[in-house]
Length: 96
Image 1 (cartoon, rainbow, N blue to C red):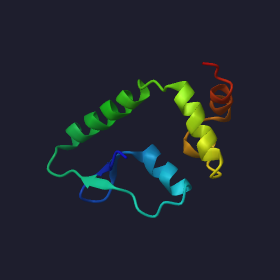
Image 2: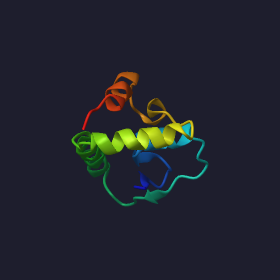
Image 3: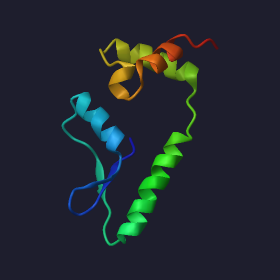
Image 4: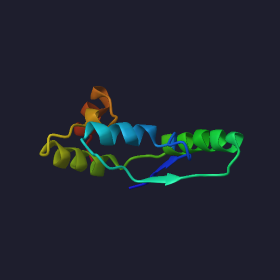
């Protein structure tokens, strides 16, 4: 798992979506790294860059479909981890 990044005041720098997903799944512990001594403008730029990089990531839909099926057995739905119902349907209907 990629740890969340926070500042010395325990404010998240990156990982808001991961944090919310973990809370929804009932996790009581979340790995975090504390970033100190960086100017606010660098942290803000890093936050934007981190979000942009994760947006451009492509999934292997065949693998994702198998993972969704596995998670479903544990009552974890795609909508619990950040996907819309439409996206979940598209992934379940994906043909190799």
